[in-house]
Image (cartoon, rainbow, N blue to C red):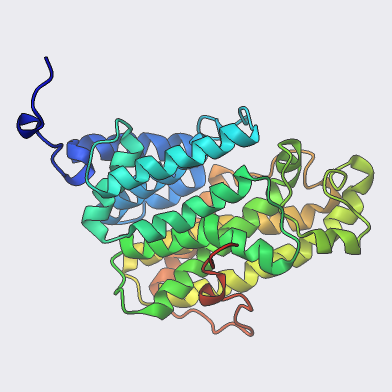
Length: 334
């Protein structure tokens, strides 16, 4: 016999869906250690509170990415039929909605974003900006113009930079700081795109604007063929120039962070910047093996970032980025 509705108890709303915070942090730490050595390396430089909140944010981003691509902490993509991809985006949105309502999700990574919402003030709208990037991939979207590329980068990384600014407790009224946080995310994603062109092509994806490819008589799906690598490599300086412009702008924002936050951010900027520059410098050989920054080189970047953080006098860039956060925030129907 069913119980009358008046005696059925509603699920209580609690931070992290009611899970123990220490458990969420530990699982998030394991996720970043498995999913991104560079981010894990840089995150150790944060103060404890910032570090733990950064791990919680990473865990949600990683889990969304894995669900969207049917994979486990990166690696080979799973089934990518249009219906399955669309259903996975719906699942991500449903679980994220539930997490922001303070309800249990039965998934530690989504409970982590619920916990972070309570602690840092990040909003469901910010999360939706990130999910929008996964939705673009689900519908096999490709950028036609540089603006399209940068809007995609905003979704998958610039918006995460904005959320990280909340994690670091930047004043919500300081729009300039959020612009610089967005710039850092954009720079990271541009480095990733340059490194992963061949892997993305193998998965049926291309993030180089079709207009750029057309200028070199290349077409998506053919651009990574061995005979086209010379022309493909000629496009990379343009991509890395964009990366370096946003990287330089992002440094301006670090001046106003607390010391350990500044050190961690500058370390990550140096490591990811090195990835992009290494791809550029390798030319057509850039994709013969995956570009990585080894432990010794990472340590060198961390030491250099330490001195940069101590001096705390970032140079004024010769040019500020053409693509600003206000231009990249998604518009309805894009």
